Image (tube, rainbow, N blue to C red; front, side):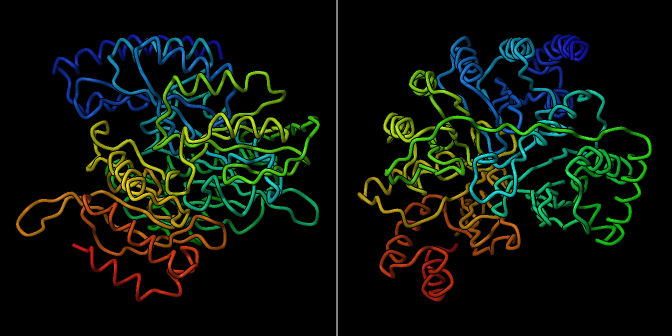
Length: 516
């Protein structure tokens, strides 16, 4: 790893030189992005400031690392950090020298931005409750970490057509989104033995697709062979000419399922003949003594380990203020065997808490973030930060939450709303109960901000599906629409899914009322 660090440190100075040329107008946005993206750095919409994305391997972190993230933010005058929907961290509103400083400090502390963007393998996503989930087949954590390590070990050598996303899930709930990613590994048990189901060719954004399932279970020790096989297939068959058709799902679309799997097996056979990539992992077993609790709370999760719990904390829109995070970290620093996991819903799980510790964490975080499912909605960073964003997704999320507060409505009726500021689906709006994607459209001769409404999608195994599109709603009317919808659902005394299924005509009536 020391050679990699040396290589990355050299790259930083090259990026600094290019970044200064970009900021003075000597280099175009696209030419800068071609280099900076692969280093996890992007220009913001202003073209005067930059953002950096740090890889937190599968969202697994700890108090020391979180304190480093706080120290870094404060060093550069930042009030908050952004938790992403791929279990990573983003800093915004930076100069090129600040970005380079963060990269250098990160490398020295084994925190990397390389491959955080661009045509590289991205942070490996994983179910944040893996290892403690009562519903899981087995803990996928060591396998996800092994793939992260594998990618990072040769991160500068990749020449891919586009980004490459790998996910792991420990249960059929698929909280790692295996069904909608390039390559997904889902834990399963057959005849008392651990295996992975493999899903491939899924993806969201433009031309979204639910992945297909590989036609056999794989040995858990074979994970890296499959990662390499898909990488090699991507390089051999991917479209290097048309960026819009360069993801793995387009190869699957072109070949068809049978030919794709046949080609994949050919690459897998070749990798197995040439490489030695067998994985032998050690599962971590908690030895902490539990203490049961009678507390009932929407953010409290009972672990499979008796008497132990996880507490979820959700900063609104994934935007967590350093002052708040410091307070929480100080409050949990003495907890034995504490485990911290970032989530794909822009939140944080504090895991391995006994009943008393869980109550303490619940109390210290109460009302600091989202308490209802609505307040725990997910939003990409959007305009005015994102280069390609269309609408202000974070602003819309806050307008929804504030509208409900003004109405004094605190009932937990709606599920999370996933808001993407454009069609790229960074908030995974296409495979959730309620999704919004930003657009601009002409209404009565005026160009208006609007959100396309997606309903009843799912990423869960065996029920994964794309949501149905129900037209467009003006951005300024979104809060009122969801408030009226909540009242209708409450009046029927059913949950959201049952309402959509049973009272579809009434649902369509309110949708058409707001459609533009």
